[in-house]
Length: 488
Image (cartoon, rainbow, N blue to C red; front, side):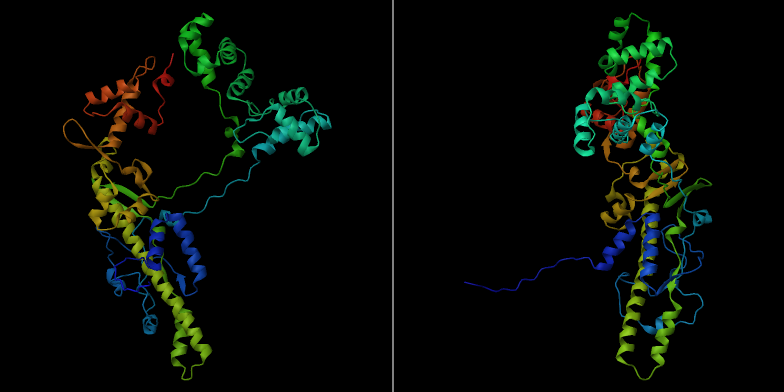
């Protein structure tokens, strides 16, 4: 039996405009500029103009707030366009604005990168300096093609022999390939074409100027690689009947080597990503000052040509269907341009208000740069302060950088969980990690401290945390276990 019934329920859905606004807020400065250029290309009713001053007060409000007096209620909601609103005779439209910033960032130009020779092409160029037969050169070039970006050949010789036969029609044997491999291993950077780390280090040591320390280092890597990698120094001292000073010199030679020779090739480096800070924090007369990068506050206005087209339509007595379609298109573009201008203004205010709250929440840290003074701070703390959703704060924190007197950092790095110390005070996990780093830095490297001992020392300093928590924080700091921190 079929039944029909009515059911009422409340549901909240984001409008397309709200979704686009969230995406705009998430964009860092460089990506925002690209999005802005795309909008200018797609919407002919939107134009950019000469920048003017536009200031924020402490709460992120604009000093020119009345310049956009129709900016009320749900700001990103599109409404029917009042044509007269776009026909103002004002030379300077009301919706022009710009962030209060130093002008240096407005003049930033893109930096060109040199087009260098690739790692593999450089190896092939070097190969041309060797006297080889046609068959030997084919094998050598195939071996070069088998080298990965780190400089290693990760395949067995038998696999390479089979691959050349099936794919290149080159028939040879393992002995010949081994012979040609020694030629390829003469190429620069030293250590290239090794099949494992041990061979890579040996190749580099053999290229060094012979000394007693180098000779000992070669013997250690060749015959006692496992003991060396596990830092069993006592075993090495006993095996070679040498002094600690002699072993230390040999280890120094090994530590100078590059375990990834391909990664050191200049032409193989990826272009450096230049971070453009979205905010700048300065200390002026003992007070913090927050600046929003001026490139986040472009000046936009409605196209004058579109205004004139609307005026022509108003002045025409007879309106054809074609004209009605045209003006409908114009209204749509004007509506979109008006919304985009409003959305950018709302983006500016959201960014500034959020970072301003973070700055004042961590004021003690920003004034002197001591990371142990970073307070526990989660997204909800800031969201509650400024009355925004946690997801909005997250979008700002996860993708924006701030330039401070102590360096440029991702904003999310200032967020951390809390832990209670032995005084019952809430302290940041960042503070605990900093203390852990200091404790490890002060340890005797001949007898590095295991995690359980580190936990005891932290407890003595007022941070009662478990050994497994110490291990977790140590790994997050990229600090190896005690055995691998040992020095002779």
